[in-house]
Length: 640
Image (cartoon, rainbow, N blue to C red; front, side):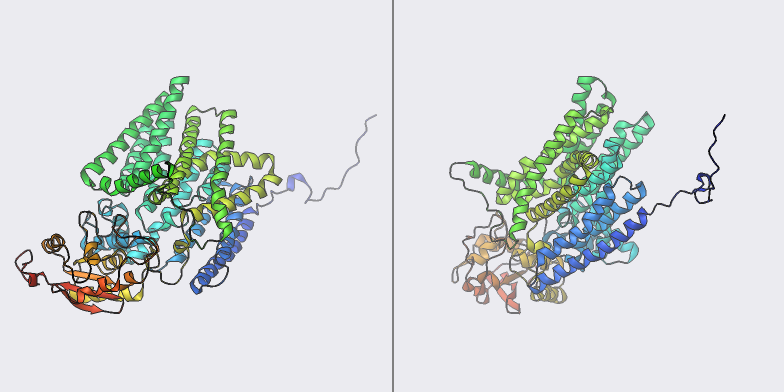
């Protein structure tokens, strides 16, 4: 006897044959979530800037609320297991766009940071005159690295955009290429798209990401070039045949050349990373004999990149070594003094800072969090073996690069080394991001409920702490004018004086000025200022006491080099510069908390026979040199 089940009425909707796959609504939810979060976050960032401008309100709280409102859901959708490749790509592009917003809101209409004025001028001069490699009076080496300026000038010429708006186009695209480049490099090494997205988000936690590497500066374009050069290097090392290897090698060389022509430190950093990769791959090839062709390719391309860097620095930009040497030498001297018996040469972190206590605590906690994350990455590298020898070698190399973050961080304890230490983090954090990302994904897979909130909290601490350690509040937020600030020294009075000199006397005039007025006169005013140096101590002219002659040798230098105008900012007798510099880092001016000049020293030019006042707006005075009254005839035989 056969038992059969009674027939069951099947409705068409329940019939497997008639069942259709449910549409994936994740992209819609993601778009809705990030749109709302982005709008709320942007509103909070704008509110923070307005609060800072008005001098009241919870500035820091509003800023970080805005950043986390978008970053947290973006990280969720990027790392989520069910997110597809296109969704992750869209999220990372949105993340790049949002993280450029703080710098865009800081100065949307023109240059603000010190180096931005120099790069704006260099790009504008190329647009006007069509000549590369012209000297720059503000940052003397940038004319030898025209990659950024030529790109901006070309876009401005082709589109009709102003130099500043053409620069914004370049910078936004470059910022997006940084995020996508880190993701592509991480995916090539790990083979996991979740790990790739995690690495891209993690790299965005470095101190330079939000403000420094988004400014109108040559490193902002050079860093994405470097990252994509490393991507093509990895492709060349893993190429299955000679034609593919040759193609990717050519791309690597091309991107390396573009990096060299754009920024000196980034080119040197790229060669250093390539050396680490080549060394690690070679050690593995010698021990296991399984990565010989990859090692040969890595060394060949590293050699070519090194030749390009050395050749450029020797024949095209020979002034670069002299430009960088004082910073490094002084930093090492201060670090030696810090380690010595007297403990001199150091700096107090967050001294007189207006940053809130929790931001300062996060700055000290961030390196600890990075150390713990790298320790977990080291344990995972030791216990988990990657079947592909090239990928494992690259993972180990990136760990070594990331470990360089910790000794470099010690330089932040010295005044001269702090700037260099911050600049290295854009390189070392690439290694940290690529080494730590697999650990984050593994934790989310095994302990999702606990690890998720904990990792978001760690993300918040790292983002807040690294940014606070890398950029002081005057760089991040607007506010009232501050004398001697690299971001708030521009006043309507100085701008008007620079515009008057250009309108009445012309451009490309050689002038003597302090650091801050020289910055405005040299960029917006189109002049060639000198702000003093050991070999050309123009600050001695200001320091000379009333009634005593200015050193004759300095007068002769000014006359023979055809300097025509002197700019005097009387605020030098009233205020101390925020960054502690009147002219340049080696100036012989005491920094004891009091102004370095008296008003009599700055007004003595009203009575000297070789200076004629032609402009006075209260704080800013402009004098024309009349060395002919001393019996000098200007070079060329004509009288002024």
